[in-house]
Structure formats: structure tokens, C-alpha cells
Length: 300
Image 1 (cartoon, rainbow, N blue to C red):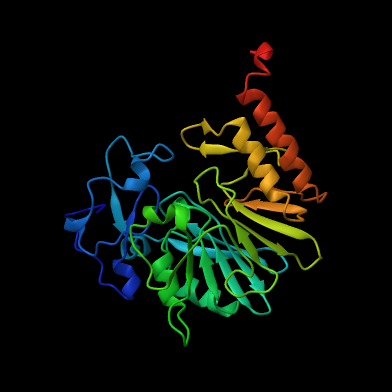
Image 2: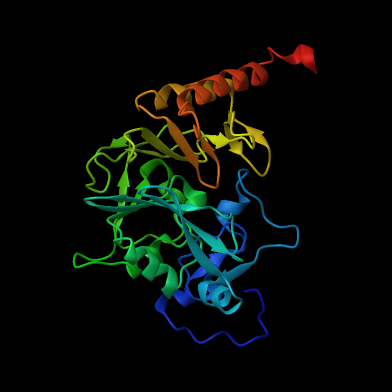
């Protein structure tokens, strides 16, 4: 853990004992530090990284004791971001989609506490949890159990092609492939697996309160800083791009949806203002392919 000489904080909730990788923030199956792998498998993969000083682990309780917290922010009517302050991991902004039939968490924080659980419960709880890819698993088992209903823990939907990356298997695990419509039994909410960043990378589609289509794309489509372009990467921290063919395949896959706005798994959004997210994705895929396939080499 982060400090083996200090006494562990007394757990106030069952999730305080949950062990997380301090680099990616993904929950681990082991309850005893002595049972942990030498290196987090997700971070040893070429899409992630292990710190130069070596593998580090922490617990939700340690983070809480150190001052980690969460905040909810409304992105648009019916869509909220759940962010972690002073946490560990990749720093994703989980999305909570509100629907009349129930709510869906898309991508999962690498932390939870009583205030965060009550905040999500105050929005109406959860009918389902889905991570766009393994880097976004976060503390999904703990969230599922903390917001359990009369039928048990919240169902956790995991892409079958990526399920081998699960270090901790949620009690309510639902593996799936291809597409789901409705997702988590929520009318108007769909999911599919265009792949790319991971073979089972997921996007979620719904219709916003203004009637426009919205995509929650995780890392499948990365939003550029100027929000006028997008990118398609195998690894963001290691600057490893996908091929041009895969970028164009992803753009074509997304054509099954009518979407005006696209959110990534941080603060990036396409189509605000303008509603032109689909056009941006296509022209970005074409530009990506031009550079990846050598057609722009005359500029180098």
C-alpha cells in the first residue's frame, strides 16, 4: 500500500477495504495485500504504464482518509458527470444518465464514499453500470453493491471481448457482445462495441432532452482540445495511434446512430455548440487515416 508503516484506517464502510491500483484505479479481487499480483495487468499492457518507481496499491479507505472526495455536475439536462477530487487512477469523469425508467452509470469512478453514494441515490439510483473499456472499471463492484436494490446489486455490463481484464468480477456481472438495445432495460438507451481502443470498447447512445442524439464514447473517440477534431488511439498516455482503417471503421460504425453531441470519458465534448459531432468524427477519421497511411508525408 502507499505506507506500509502506518496503521490502516478503521473502515467505516465495506468498500473502504477495496484495493485499487494507484495508477489506473481499477479494483482488485484480493482483499489481502499479500495476494496482489506483482504488477497490475492493466498497467503492464502497452495501453497503460507502470510508474518508474514501481507498482503501487491503495484502498478506498486510505483515499478517504487522505481527503479524496467527489462532485456531481450537470452536463446537460438528464446527464451528470461524477468526478473524483484528489484521487488516484486515470481521472475519468463518470456519466450518470437519467431516464424515466431508471438511471445508468457510464464509466465508473475509482472511488466512492457515503456522500457520493447518497448523491447518486438522490438522482434516482442506478438501473445499470457499464464501463466503456477496462481502464474505466474503477470501483464498479463496490458501486454496484452500494446502490443495490430489492433485486440485489446493480447489474454491471461488461463487454465479453474484454472480460478477461476483470481483476474483480462483480456479483451482478452481465457479459455481452455486439449490441444491446435497450441497455439495462432502459427504453431509448442503446450500446454497441465498435472496438478500437480495446476490442470490446463500448459507446452508449440516447436521445437528449432537446431531442438530439447523444453518444457517450469513452476513449473510443478522443476529443481534441479545441473540440473541433477527434482522435483514435490505442494508447493515449503512450501516444500509440490506431490505424487509419480502424479509425474509419469506428466512424462508420457510429453511423448507425443519429448523434449531434459526443462526450468522451473526461471533459471533452463534440457538437457544443453546433450539433455537428458526427461530421467532426468523419472528417477526423479521414484526417487520421491520411496521416497514419503516409498521404501527408510531404509535410514532414
